[in-house]
Image (cartoon, rainbow, N blue to C red; front, side, top):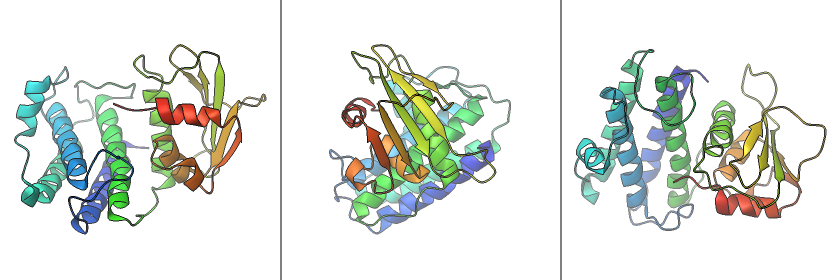
Length: 260
């Protein structure tokens, strides 16, 4: 996806998140984030938007420490002002990313063609996943994530987050997980495919199809695999995803493939 497409996805998904929140009590539990109520979700995403905005707008070359982040984000609002506070932070981040130069230099934490590409992509998926959480709190499913965004989000998760040294997805014996989408983004060359080899070291990932079977193969539409792999959709509810092989590996994923 292009940077402009990520920014547009951030815009749409943030608007959808706010709409879901506007029709829901702030005390509503968030089933996909069991420790949270909707107010906690809004404060979290609003915090992240302001945090990212500060890094990009100030061209920061290192992450903010706790004190710096608190100063950048400012005081947390009361419940009465929470939704407006979220909307303001979301709009400011969209404007900052839209106006940022292509040669922007600032801190980022995953491999990317550029810092601007990283932040646009990361905030698009941060917001899209939490929009699903807001829909869950509202008790009504929202629109499915666009296939292009879903494919991109699977790629960010498995090739970005899961291969970091701090990733907790590990196995005492080598195990393989193949993820294969049955749809593709408009204009893309075929559907997405990722093969993870999970050992006692950070997983390795290839995007080529291997002739030998994996220990577990997950096949289905990108929007369901996106939510399943981000641990937002239980396997039994992913009705269009076919799981072939050792389903214990899916349980390992659910337990260990977490983003902090």
